[in-house]
Length: 357
Image 1 (cartoon, rainbow, N blue to C red):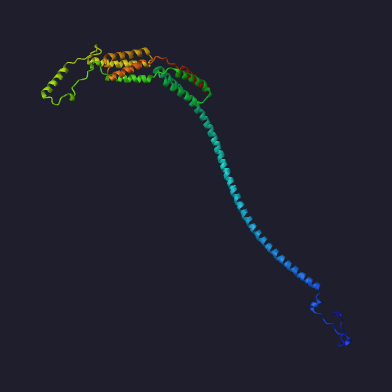
Image 2: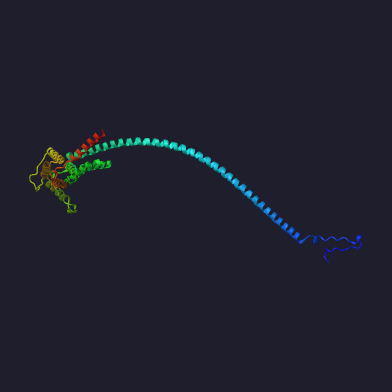
């Protein structure tokens, strides 16, 4: 029978016995047990979630504290950087002010330098034009006095180089005139005046070493030692030497020019001096571009040498050959003038000076 059925106890008064109490596991229902187990499981889950959440919150707090510390350090560094930037800005402003002051000073100095440069440029142009005029004067003197075309051409080329360094369009007509005169000089026949003058000087210096015709002596003929016999006695040797001495007392000579002039020492001295004067006169005629006088002096010098000097001597022959070469030189060439260039430079200087005033 079921436990819910009540049993009647006859031993008890009233005829009924008390119902016995059920056991604990008999008294708890399965639903309650499920509820309790579910509650325990839920509580464990809640406790585990609470613990995990607490750990996460602690980690987050730690991370937040770390981030806050880093943010605080970054803020401090930012403040330091901001302070340094502010200080750098102030220094930059100070430097900028100094630079502006220096820029203003440099601009004023630049203006002063430009003004000074303009003044120096004008002075340099004037000095260059003056140098060009002096060079053209030198070239003109070389042509008129020394007849030295080469030196005049060099002076004019230097003057043109000075004008080229100025590099002004206004100087183009002046340079064209200068180039035209240089072309005329280049086309002129060249006479080596300096070389001819130096040759005449060397010939005049060599006059004292020329042998005169009257000083010529035939070579002495002496018997060679091979012709003397070793066995010759003393008397024969003495007789032969005496005969040689007698033969030297009288000399017979065949002369190609029987009219050799015999000059006294004073006459020989004046002959040499007059020959030197003739050569120096030829040099003077060379510088004066006097062709007839130059040839006359050269011919007179050659005539005196052929008449009074030993033409068989090597030094005399060399001098005659040099005089023949000089005789063929054409020195009477009329040289062109460079007055156009000189006048152009002077006119330009006058116009330049008026423009500056």
